Image (tube, rainbow, N blue to C red; front, side):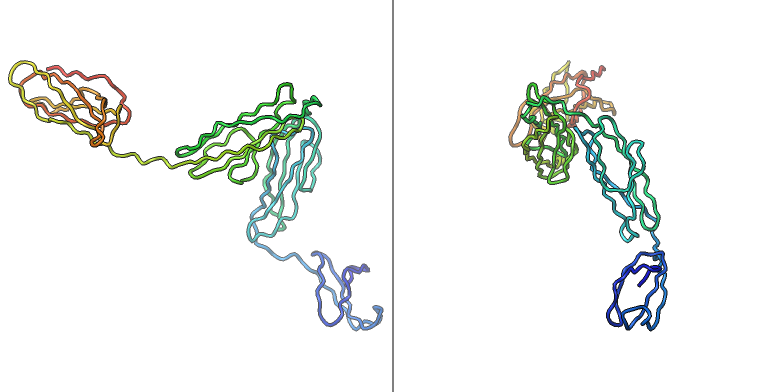
Length: 333
């Protein structure tokens, strides 16, 4: 097979075979019996064209750029096309104001702040919206004699409820070159840079973390294991009162009311309501607090109520999670 006068494919011995060539050109194929083209028994031309692909989705490009680098920065780009797409044709980047480049690796040793823009184009011509990342390149704050790695600690606990938020703290040795980066790996996920891991969900987890100083000393990784448990389902509390109907015969009488909050514990609160004789209105008169614990029944509360008229009194008690008002509402007759 020839592209003009240039041979682009090896000879095929026999009556069939395959030669792979680029699209968009016209090629001449000779069928020959002897050592030269003059011994040919026929020829034909072919013009392969790009197959039609109904791809309207642009590729996706990512980078492993970090916020800060020391001495030099090396960044890798990765591009993938959508499933069933035409495939990634080109990946481009622009570093600061330099000309556009078409490679998957970016490097610089220029100290200062930098902006990297990158995007890809697929075979069908779909162009991805450019991504912009910024990073800082610093010079090593050396003393050359710094050979001691930083020390990184965390505030992790063995158990969390609902979610976990862990803070890392890194310090370098006295007179050292200073902490340049802190990294962590959660449950085997890709390495991440930073000092916090937030909103870690329910399950058992393993966290590895370490730091690197400006002189390049790398700390041995620290390991932490912890569990995040689901929040307990709140139990419904009930309140009881020993007496709901109290009679008064003469004068003012003091009534001692008692009851339980179950399930409960010392310090639980409840609101006490009273309906006085000849009244249809319930009035909250007190916030009671459990003072003792009955292991079988729950938490015990006690309240002393002063009756102000003859007749039948009705009382109700309702548990509360966190009282907003612990003052008594005094109802006068």
